[in-house]
Length: 371
Image 1: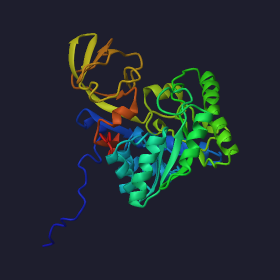
Image 2 (image 1 turned 90 degrees about the vertical axis):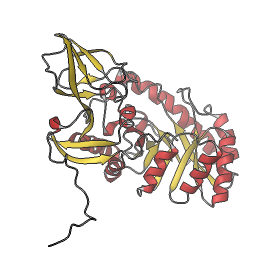
Image 3 (image 1 turned 120 degrees about the vertical axis):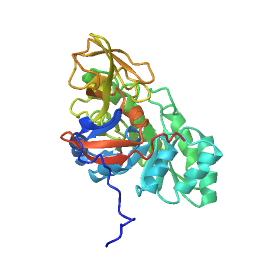
Protein backbone atom coordinates (compact mmCIF):
# COMPACT_ATOMS: atom_id res chain seq x y z
CA UNK A 1 0.00 0.00 0.00
CA UNK A 2 1.39 3.36 -0.99
CA UNK A 3 2.15 5.68 1.89
CA UNK A 4 0.71 9.14 2.31
CA UNK A 5 2.84 11.85 0.77
CA UNK A 6 3.37 14.13 3.74
CA UNK A 7 5.02 16.68 1.48
CA UNK A 8 1.99 17.11 -0.76
CA UNK A 9 0.53 20.58 -0.78
CA UNK A 10 -2.79 20.75 1.01
CA UNK A 11 -5.61 21.92 -1.23
CA UNK A 12 -7.96 24.46 0.33
CA UNK A 13 -11.35 22.82 0.76
CA UNK A 14 -13.07 26.01 -0.41
CA UNK A 15 -11.74 25.72 -3.96
CA UNK A 16 -14.60 24.75 -6.23
CA UNK A 17 -17.18 25.93 -3.73
CA UNK A 18 -19.82 28.53 -4.71
CA UNK A 19 -18.94 31.78 -2.99
CA UNK A 20 -22.48 32.13 -1.67
CA UNK A 21 -21.82 29.07 0.48
CA UNK A 22 -18.77 30.60 2.20
CA UNK A 23 -18.72 31.74 5.80
CA UNK A 24 -19.00 35.46 6.41
CA UNK A 25 -17.39 37.93 6.49
CA UNK A 26 -14.99 36.83 3.72
CA UNK A 27 -12.82 39.12 1.60
CA UNK A 28 -13.36 38.32 -2.08
CA UNK A 29 -11.63 39.18 -5.34
CA UNK A 30 -13.22 38.68 -8.74
CA UNK A 31 -10.21 37.39 -10.67
CA UNK A 32 -11.51 38.25 -14.12
CA UNK A 33 -12.40 41.82 -13.09
CA UNK A 34 -9.01 42.35 -11.45
CA UNK A 35 -7.19 40.94 -14.48
CA UNK A 36 -9.10 43.34 -16.73
CA UNK A 37 -7.99 46.22 -14.52
CA UNK A 38 -4.37 45.09 -14.61
CA UNK A 39 -4.47 44.74 -18.38
CA UNK A 40 -6.16 48.12 -18.87
CA UNK A 41 -3.62 50.02 -16.77
CA UNK A 42 -0.66 48.16 -18.26
CA UNK A 43 -1.91 48.85 -21.79
CA UNK A 44 -2.24 52.56 -21.02
CA UNK A 45 1.43 52.80 -20.05
CA UNK A 46 2.84 50.37 -22.58
CA UNK A 47 3.77 53.13 -25.02
CA UNK A 48 3.99 56.03 -22.56
CA UNK A 49 7.25 57.59 -21.37
CA UNK A 50 6.13 57.00 -17.77
CA UNK A 51 6.03 53.47 -16.40
CA UNK A 52 3.85 51.80 -13.83
CA UNK A 53 5.12 51.13 -10.30
CA UNK A 54 1.96 49.92 -8.48
CA UNK A 55 1.39 50.61 -4.81
CA UNK A 56 1.50 47.40 -2.78
CA UNK A 57 -0.42 49.01 0.08
CA UNK A 58 -3.64 48.59 -1.88
CA UNK A 59 -3.81 44.83 -1.39
CA UNK A 60 -0.58 43.75 0.39
CA UNK A 61 -0.83 40.42 -1.46
CA UNK A 62 2.34 39.03 -3.08
CA UNK A 63 0.42 36.97 -5.63
CA UNK A 64 -1.43 40.03 -6.87
CA UNK A 65 1.80 42.05 -6.92
CA UNK A 66 3.42 39.41 -9.13
CA UNK A 67 0.44 39.54 -11.47
CA UNK A 68 0.92 43.31 -11.75
CA UNK A 69 4.59 42.82 -12.59
CA UNK A 70 3.75 40.14 -15.14
CA UNK A 71 1.34 42.60 -16.76
CA UNK A 72 4.17 45.08 -17.28
CA UNK A 73 4.91 47.00 -14.08
CA UNK A 74 8.60 47.92 -13.57
CA UNK A 75 8.62 47.48 -9.79
CA UNK A 76 6.50 47.96 -6.70
CA UNK A 77 5.81 50.88 -4.38
CA UNK A 78 5.38 50.33 -0.65
CA UNK A 79 4.16 52.46 2.23
CA UNK A 80 6.17 50.65 4.88
CA UNK A 81 9.56 49.01 5.27
CA UNK A 82 7.81 45.84 6.44
CA UNK A 83 5.91 45.66 3.15
CA UNK A 84 9.16 45.99 1.21
CA UNK A 85 10.73 43.19 3.24
CA UNK A 86 7.81 40.91 2.39
CA UNK A 87 8.17 41.66 -1.32
CA UNK A 88 11.92 41.06 -1.36
CA UNK A 89 11.50 37.86 0.65
CA UNK A 90 9.24 36.65 -2.15
CA UNK A 91 11.62 37.50 -4.97
CA UNK A 92 10.46 41.00 -5.97
CA UNK A 93 13.71 42.91 -6.11
CA UNK A 94 12.85 46.45 -7.19
CA UNK A 95 10.94 48.37 -4.54
CA UNK A 96 10.32 51.98 -3.61
CA UNK A 97 9.31 52.85 -0.06
CA UNK A 98 7.33 56.04 -0.61
CA UNK A 99 7.81 57.15 2.96
CA UNK A 100 10.45 58.37 5.38
CA UNK A 101 12.42 55.69 7.25
CA UNK A 102 13.51 56.96 10.66
CA UNK A 103 15.06 55.37 13.76
CA UNK A 104 18.14 53.16 14.21
CA UNK A 105 16.22 49.87 14.07
CA UNK A 106 14.53 50.78 10.81
CA UNK A 107 17.62 52.24 9.13
CA UNK A 108 19.55 49.06 9.97
CA UNK A 109 16.72 46.95 8.49
CA UNK A 110 16.67 49.16 5.41
CA UNK A 111 20.40 48.80 4.91
CA UNK A 112 20.19 45.02 5.21
CA UNK A 113 17.32 44.92 2.74
CA UNK A 114 19.39 46.92 0.27
CA UNK A 115 21.96 44.13 0.34
CA UNK A 116 19.40 41.93 -1.39
CA UNK A 117 17.47 44.24 -3.70
CA UNK A 118 17.27 47.60 -5.42
CA UNK A 119 15.62 49.70 -2.71
CA UNK A 120 14.67 53.36 -2.89
CA UNK A 121 13.21 55.47 -0.10
CA UNK A 122 11.79 58.97 0.25
CA UNK A 123 13.60 61.63 2.29
CA UNK A 124 12.80 65.25 3.01
CA UNK A 125 15.55 66.17 5.49
CA UNK A 126 19.30 65.75 5.71
CA UNK A 127 19.02 64.00 9.09
CA UNK A 128 17.06 61.12 7.55
CA UNK A 129 19.56 60.77 4.72
CA UNK A 130 22.57 60.93 7.04
CA UNK A 131 21.22 58.17 9.26
CA UNK A 132 20.50 55.97 6.24
CA UNK A 133 23.98 56.73 4.90
CA UNK A 134 25.60 55.56 8.13
CA UNK A 135 23.56 52.36 8.23
CA UNK A 136 24.17 51.55 4.57
CA UNK A 137 27.89 52.23 4.85
CA UNK A 138 28.12 49.90 7.85
CA UNK A 139 26.21 47.20 5.97
CA UNK A 140 28.09 47.65 2.73
CA UNK A 141 24.91 48.33 0.80
CA UNK A 142 23.53 51.11 -1.39
CA UNK A 143 20.18 52.80 -0.73
CA UNK A 144 18.61 55.00 -3.39
CA UNK A 145 17.07 58.25 -2.18
CA UNK A 146 14.17 60.21 -3.66
CA UNK A 147 13.63 63.72 -2.36
CA UNK A 148 9.97 64.10 -1.51
CA UNK A 149 8.61 67.42 -2.72
CA UNK A 150 5.37 68.73 -1.22
CA UNK A 151 3.22 69.85 -4.16
CA UNK A 152 0.18 70.64 -2.02
CA UNK A 153 -0.55 67.50 -0.01
CA UNK A 154 0.64 69.23 3.17
CA UNK A 155 2.08 66.06 4.64
CA UNK A 156 5.77 65.21 4.20
CA UNK A 157 8.14 66.83 1.73
CA UNK A 158 10.35 69.83 1.18
CA UNK A 159 9.04 72.85 -0.65
CA UNK A 160 9.49 72.83 -4.45
CA UNK A 161 12.38 74.67 -6.01
CA UNK A 162 15.41 75.90 -4.09
CA UNK A 163 14.83 73.87 -0.86
CA UNK A 164 14.83 70.64 -2.89
CA UNK A 165 17.97 71.72 -4.76
CA UNK A 166 19.71 72.56 -1.50
CA UNK A 167 18.93 69.09 -0.15
CA UNK A 168 20.03 67.39 -3.37
CA UNK A 169 23.41 69.12 -3.12
CA UNK A 170 23.89 67.62 0.34
CA UNK A 171 22.78 64.13 -0.65
CA UNK A 172 25.22 63.64 -3.50
CA UNK A 173 28.20 63.72 -1.13
CA UNK A 174 26.91 61.06 1.28
CA UNK A 175 28.38 57.54 1.12
CA UNK A 176 26.19 54.46 0.96
CA UNK A 177 23.32 56.31 -0.72
CA UNK A 178 22.55 57.57 -4.20
CA UNK A 179 20.31 60.51 -5.06
CA UNK A 180 18.00 58.98 -7.63
CA UNK A 181 15.15 61.42 -8.12
CA UNK A 182 12.02 63.06 -6.78
CA UNK A 183 8.82 61.79 -5.26
CA UNK A 184 5.69 63.94 -5.45
CA UNK A 185 2.10 63.02 -4.68
CA UNK A 186 -0.94 65.07 -5.60
CA UNK A 187 -3.05 63.28 -3.00
CA UNK A 188 -4.94 66.41 -2.01
CA UNK A 189 -6.56 66.36 -5.45
CA UNK A 190 -7.27 62.71 -6.20
CA UNK A 191 -10.79 62.89 -4.74
CA UNK A 192 -11.91 65.82 -6.88
CA UNK A 193 -15.01 64.32 -8.47
CA UNK A 194 -15.13 66.48 -11.60
CA UNK A 195 -12.63 64.76 -13.87
CA UNK A 196 -11.74 67.78 -15.99
CA UNK A 197 -11.12 69.86 -12.87
CA UNK A 198 -9.05 67.05 -11.36
CA UNK A 199 -6.92 66.77 -14.50
CA UNK A 200 -6.21 70.49 -14.63
CA UNK A 201 -5.43 70.93 -10.95
CA UNK A 202 -3.37 67.77 -10.57
CA UNK A 203 -1.21 68.61 -13.58
CA UNK A 204 -0.65 72.11 -12.20
CA UNK A 205 0.42 70.61 -8.87
CA UNK A 206 2.76 68.03 -10.42
CA UNK A 207 4.31 70.67 -12.64
CA UNK A 208 5.95 72.02 -9.49
CA UNK A 209 7.87 68.75 -9.20
CA UNK A 210 8.82 68.86 -12.87
CA UNK A 211 10.06 72.44 -12.51
CA UNK A 212 12.05 71.38 -9.46
CA UNK A 213 13.60 68.59 -11.47
CA UNK A 214 14.68 71.04 -14.14
CA UNK A 215 16.19 73.32 -11.50
CA UNK A 216 18.23 70.50 -10.00
CA UNK A 217 19.36 69.29 -13.42
CA UNK A 218 20.37 72.83 -14.37
CA UNK A 219 22.68 72.77 -11.35
CA UNK A 220 24.44 69.75 -12.87
CA UNK A 221 22.82 67.10 -10.68
CA UNK A 222 21.13 64.23 -12.56
CA UNK A 223 17.55 63.45 -11.56
CA UNK A 224 16.81 59.85 -12.43
CA UNK A 225 13.05 60.01 -12.12
CA UNK A 226 9.94 61.65 -10.78
CA UNK A 227 7.68 59.09 -9.11
CA UNK A 228 4.13 59.79 -7.96
CA UNK A 229 0.50 59.90 -9.15
CA UNK A 230 -2.45 57.60 -8.37
CA UNK A 231 -5.24 55.51 -9.84
CA UNK A 232 -7.35 58.68 -10.06
CA UNK A 233 -4.68 60.75 -11.85
CA UNK A 234 -2.79 58.14 -13.88
CA UNK A 235 -4.02 59.65 -17.14
CA UNK A 236 -3.33 63.26 -16.14
CA UNK A 237 -0.16 63.60 -14.07
CA UNK A 238 1.00 60.22 -15.37
CA UNK A 239 1.24 61.69 -18.87
CA UNK A 240 2.88 64.96 -17.85
CA UNK A 241 6.30 65.36 -19.53
CA UNK A 242 8.98 64.84 -16.91
CA UNK A 243 7.05 62.27 -14.85
CA UNK A 244 8.60 58.79 -15.05
CA UNK A 245 6.72 56.51 -12.64
CA UNK A 246 3.09 56.17 -11.64
CA UNK A 247 2.35 54.73 -8.21
CA UNK A 248 -1.27 53.76 -8.92
CA UNK A 249 -2.57 51.23 -6.42
CA UNK A 250 -6.33 50.91 -6.12
CA UNK A 251 -6.90 50.04 -9.79
CA UNK A 252 -6.02 46.40 -9.03
CA UNK A 253 -9.03 45.93 -6.74
CA UNK A 254 -11.05 49.16 -6.91
CA UNK A 255 -13.48 50.31 -4.25
CA UNK A 256 -16.58 52.48 -4.03
CA UNK A 257 -14.76 55.82 -3.93
CA UNK A 258 -12.19 55.17 -6.64
CA UNK A 259 -14.86 53.76 -8.92
CA UNK A 260 -16.50 57.19 -8.78
CA UNK A 261 -13.19 58.69 -9.87
CA UNK A 262 -12.10 56.13 -12.47
CA UNK A 263 -15.21 54.20 -13.60
CA UNK A 264 -13.29 52.63 -16.49
CA UNK A 265 -11.94 50.13 -13.95
CA UNK A 266 -14.13 47.37 -12.55
CA UNK A 267 -14.83 46.83 -8.87
CA UNK A 268 -13.16 43.47 -8.22
CA UNK A 269 -13.10 43.61 -4.42
CA UNK A 270 -16.01 42.85 -2.13
CA UNK A 271 -16.69 41.49 1.31
CA UNK A 272 -19.19 38.69 1.55
CA UNK A 273 -21.56 39.51 4.42
CA UNK A 274 -24.71 38.06 5.89
CA UNK A 275 -27.97 39.52 7.19
CA UNK A 276 -28.10 38.67 10.89
CA UNK A 277 -31.07 40.71 12.08
CA UNK A 278 -34.29 42.31 10.79
CA UNK A 279 -35.38 44.53 13.70
CA UNK A 280 -38.24 45.93 11.66
CA UNK A 281 -39.47 45.62 8.05
CA UNK A 282 -37.34 48.51 6.83
CA UNK A 283 -34.11 47.75 8.65
CA UNK A 284 -31.48 45.04 8.22
CA UNK A 285 -28.25 44.46 10.15
CA UNK A 286 -25.19 42.85 8.56
CA UNK A 287 -22.38 40.94 10.27
CA UNK A 288 -19.57 43.38 9.48
CA UNK A 289 -18.49 46.79 10.77
CA UNK A 290 -15.40 48.94 10.80
CA UNK A 291 -13.29 45.98 11.93
CA UNK A 292 -13.99 44.40 8.55
CA UNK A 293 -14.06 47.25 6.04
CA UNK A 294 -12.29 50.58 5.74
CA UNK A 295 -14.63 53.56 5.96
CA UNK A 296 -12.29 56.52 5.49
CA UNK A 297 -13.99 57.55 2.25
CA UNK A 298 -17.54 57.15 3.49
CA UNK A 299 -20.00 54.34 3.95
CA UNK A 300 -19.80 51.14 1.90
CA UNK A 301 -22.36 50.07 -0.68
CA UNK A 302 -24.27 46.86 -1.28
CA UNK A 303 -23.60 45.38 -4.69
CA UNK A 304 -26.72 44.80 -6.79
CA UNK A 305 -28.76 47.12 -4.54
CA UNK A 306 -27.70 50.68 -5.47
CA UNK A 307 -30.72 52.30 -3.83
CA UNK A 308 -30.16 50.74 -0.43
CA UNK A 309 -29.11 53.30 2.18
CA UNK A 310 -26.44 52.72 4.83
CA UNK A 311 -27.05 55.69 7.17
CA UNK A 312 -24.00 55.14 9.34
CA UNK A 313 -20.98 52.87 9.45
CA UNK A 314 -19.49 53.30 12.90
CA UNK A 315 -20.12 50.06 14.78
CA UNK A 316 -17.30 47.57 15.21
CA UNK A 317 -19.19 44.50 14.04
CA UNK A 318 -22.43 45.72 12.46
CA UNK A 319 -23.67 47.56 9.40
CA UNK A 320 -27.19 48.96 9.65
CA UNK A 321 -29.17 49.21 6.42
CA UNK A 322 -32.28 51.34 6.02
CA UNK A 323 -35.00 50.88 3.38
CA UNK A 324 -33.81 47.29 3.11
CA UNK A 325 -35.45 45.03 0.53
CA UNK A 326 -37.16 41.86 1.60
CA UNK A 327 -33.92 40.21 2.67
CA UNK A 328 -34.27 37.16 4.85
CA UNK A 329 -32.15 36.52 7.91
CA UNK A 330 -29.14 34.57 6.72
CA UNK A 331 -29.15 36.07 3.22
CA UNK A 332 -25.68 36.61 1.76
CA UNK A 333 -24.71 39.93 0.14
CA UNK A 334 -21.65 41.61 -1.36
CA UNK A 335 -20.52 44.73 0.49
CA UNK A 336 -18.34 47.15 -1.50
CA UNK A 337 -15.95 49.04 0.83
CA UNK A 338 -15.35 52.72 0.31
CA UNK A 339 -11.61 52.16 0.77
CA UNK A 340 -9.86 49.02 -0.46
CA UNK A 341 -6.44 49.73 1.09
CA UNK A 342 -7.54 49.76 4.71
CA UNK A 343 -9.96 46.91 4.06
CA UNK A 344 -7.33 44.49 2.72
CA UNK A 345 -5.06 45.34 5.65
CA UNK A 346 -7.68 43.82 7.98
CA UNK A 347 -7.57 40.35 6.42
CA UNK A 348 -4.99 37.56 6.21
CA UNK A 349 -6.26 36.09 2.94
CA UNK A 350 -8.35 36.93 -0.08
CA UNK A 351 -10.65 34.35 -1.60
CA UNK A 352 -10.46 34.57 -5.38
CA UNK A 353 -13.47 33.60 -7.48
CA UNK A 354 -14.45 33.26 -11.11
CA UNK A 355 -18.11 33.31 -12.13
CA UNK A 356 -19.15 32.84 -8.53
CA UNK A 357 -16.95 29.82 -7.77
CA UNK A 358 -13.80 29.83 -5.60
CA UNK A 359 -10.73 29.21 -7.76
CA UNK A 360 -7.83 30.25 -5.50
CA UNK A 361 -7.06 31.53 -2.01
CA UNK A 362 -4.22 34.04 -1.83
CA UNK A 363 -2.48 34.97 1.40
CA UNK A 364 -2.23 38.67 2.22
CA UNK A 365 1.32 38.41 3.50
CA UNK A 366 1.79 42.03 4.49
CA UNK A 367 -1.50 42.62 6.30
CA UNK A 368 -0.82 44.34 9.60
CA UNK A 369 2.73 45.26 8.62
CA UNK A 370 2.84 48.73 10.10
CA UNK A 371 6.55 49.15 10.76
